[in-house]
Image 1: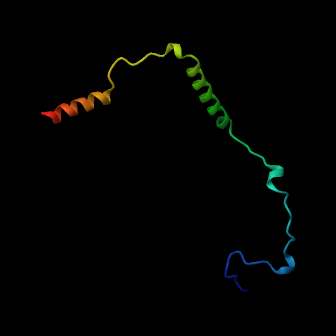
Image 2: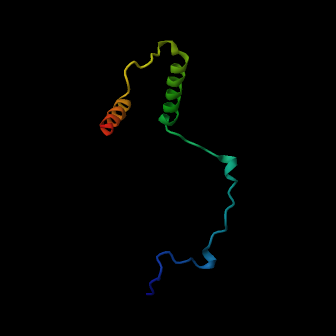
Image 3: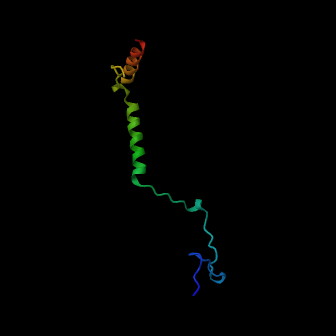
Length: 80
């Protein structure tokens, strides 16, 4: 019995099915998202909007930032 050289040998021309025409993808576009793909951006947007709407509670930082202190000490070290 002959063994095909390729695992997917072409079918004989008589058994091929005619090509089925599919409608364009725009006619039947279906997008399915998980629940968190909609919920997380909505929660993030609401949190940012809440922070923007209530700036009266914001306070300026009183302490020097750590990076500034590090640069200042480095400059003092090189100045010696």
